[in-house]
Length: 154
Length: 154
DNA sequence: TTAGGTGCAAATTCTTTGCACCCTG
DNA sequence: CAGGGTGCAAAGAATTTGCACCTAA
Image 1 (cartoon, rainbow over the protein chains, first blue to last red):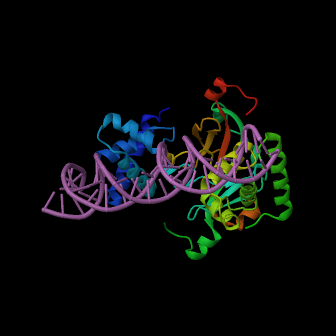
Image 2: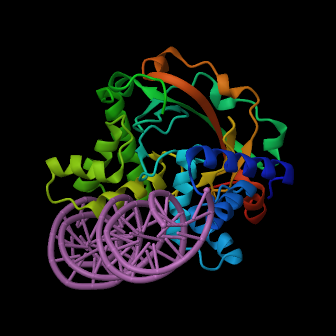
Image 3: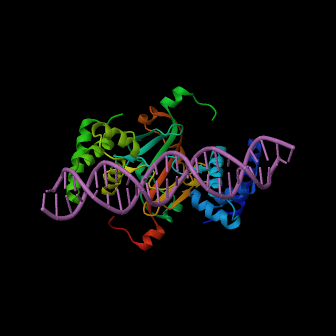
């Protein structure tokens, strides 16, 4: 599945702007890597971005792809699915429930379902497949992190 | 943070039952590992379960912890945070949006926000920290997987 | 020109596997 | 007592890092 051209160009333009502001060089590799992520709706992993970019630019290396993806994440122009560069975490609570996740330290807590499990799905989603369950993830800053460093930038 | 004793014993009893039904042996290691996950609300990773269990049972090995955690997951008595034993995946869509995730193949698609971003948080959650944003993850089976193998068991 | 970026190869970290011995059922 | 389960050590996957060369600004 492909992002339409207008949106893609918009994203690329935004990248140029942000990169310039941040004093980050626009190398061929970075442009190609960003284009790859920005034009995909498949939420690719690094390996898969690497394979695609390699077709047009056979000399890229996987580590440049990694460095670039994290750089783009730090820039705030892309994000990651399910948070952190972390290992799998286990949960003995198998009731329908939801999570609060601290975006600074990764702390995660369950909370009970106040009816979210049956949120109505937009029509669009019905075409993707058969929905079994819905989970809500509330992202924020946990009490402890707030104590260490109250909100503002970063 | 600790799970209260009543709930813990309930979980352990359920493990005994399920294990017996599945013809899985109740070894000391498995009991200790399950108890560790079941008594924690911290969603520990394998390494951290290992460290805790090792205190009471210095001979356990990390690989047994891994094997046991995945076995418990297959048994359906525990779950994992954010799905799969997979690598980090990137997303160029940084607008507030939500995900449909196929629990069989991991396929993930965005969908636009029909107002979920401002779901009211239960009071309980407010004590965990300051909430910045809410994301909904709808889990189900995607069209392609349904075609390959329509729903019923597993 | 020149600092930041890249490719390469080696290092790390997280997770899985093969195998001989052990213990639950 | 038999077959599944365990510990150990080594293999694999995913990701990161050190370094010398290269290139965008």
